[in-house]
Image 1 (cartoon, rainbow, N blue to C red):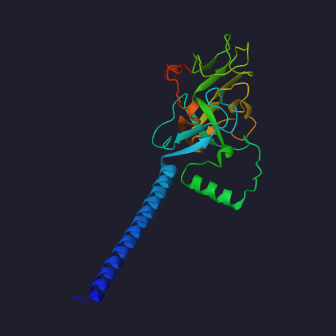
Image 2 (cartoon, rainbow, N blue to C red):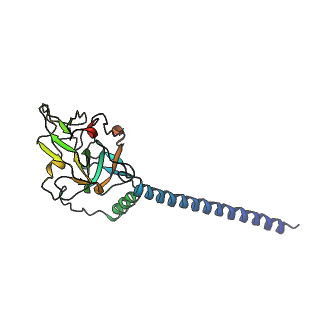
Length: 249
């Protein structure tokens, strides 16, 4: 074998090794792309059908939820899982609850990133178009406030509400008295920050008289996910509403 033949075979082996490396890199990049696309699609499906993230747009749910907290919402409620008294729910505006909002223009890159994060459920640019409240009355419930102790009652059962935030020295759980029966397929909802919440009590002049149609429920919030210091499971306080379903009405 001549020196030229040996050099040729060495070059062929080097070229073959280089080609294998290139193919390996291309296969690796292809696999990364497939994994990324699958992850995006799975995230989209989860966000569309199972859970999604929202941020808290106001102070109406303090101290349970603080403005700008991030929450995770179970979107199987109410279709697969029924709504219960005390649930914290995200709602589409029933009409007239929220002021008109002017869209603020974003730089193209920021808008693109925000769109992608919203697509996979990591951002919620439409949070300001939704409400977060606690369910107090279900269809047919008789909700009254307030008794001599300042309590609200549902179907004749007075409620001890540990989640309610009141101004110092105040004992009434609502500034204004009310006496209503919840319409069919609707909810009566209130914020935990009772003296700073524009909820069912203060929307009785709207076409739906303060009631929220079941179809407007986006889902039930079940955890505070951000910031880490606020991380918590969200309770619906079943002990507060014990006996309400068997109440006298």
